[in-house]
Image (spheres, rainbow, N blue to C red):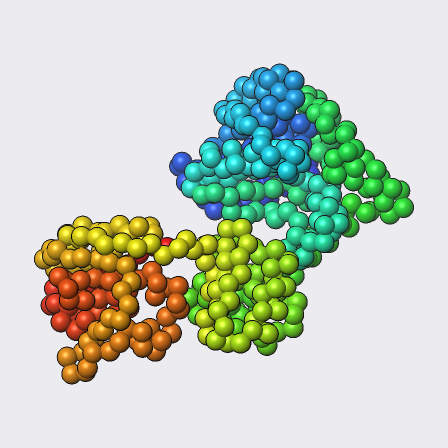
Length: 444
């Protein structure tokens, strides 16, 4: 054996995988890399090329196959995947899903929703799910989203890494082409499944792949690469925009991510204001408002008087205005009426899903908790007179819908507190003596 002999050159596919693995954090003992393995050429190459690299990287490798049950040969495809995984010595997990809402979302989108829901179910903290998307897929995604009037986030297309359930989803071949993947498969004499639906040009992505992109490449040979490169530049612009939006949201929301100062929106051009509003709602963990709702929000907050109640709803969310702030929340149900007994040794679950508790070393007491009572007064300090709750609510800027849902704590007929804001001075002194705190957790 010649000691000076150079090792065989590493191919572009394995180089991309090696570089991608190098930027991952150190693997924990339980962490696993899952390859989403359909049996098609792309995922077959990903699984085959990745397998020998993981010995040195000390990651556990697994493959996961999803059977959508949409094709008569799906069981045969699942068996092919099982046999290939056995040949590689890679454990395979097979999942079967029921694809729903085919007519509502279309077959592509409905299958994708079912597939990713199933894939997310196997993820554990620290896991990575790897898909075999490549630069040609990225170019197709860019065109599809452009044709749907996507914004910067959509046009940036698929991210190389993103959060996915308790782990991450990675696309290590995003900078490699379909031709490079086919070359790897030919050189290694791999066998894969040809899904006949990939030739159906009535599906949007297939139409782009088989009709549109070949025409673009005939005129501009570098078209696919250029489109994929554009998504990378757009992603960099998106990151810069997100950083600026985060700065603006911090200034406009402070420590209250579910509300925003309307002056921060009013000072912006319409398009910038719409983007700021949309980003704020998403960061509040709510569904993004559709364009028509964004337009209506901007119209209302610029035309409506500041003392006028404003409520705008869309599926899964609503916005409410109080004074100079806009509040984002899940749709509120009517405020429930209730009268409950509470032994304070244990938390008290309220009808709207929130929970009352007294933390600390205070001895247990038997209290009553009621829904809002009109005309109440509280003395907050021994040297001050009783105050009407209505005025306290106004002075502290508490929105009406929060007042309606506040639990009132009583000892007999004596009002002790309106959680979480106001505590009668003697009850407050008792809590302080026992280093205790009245808490209200959860959201209505």
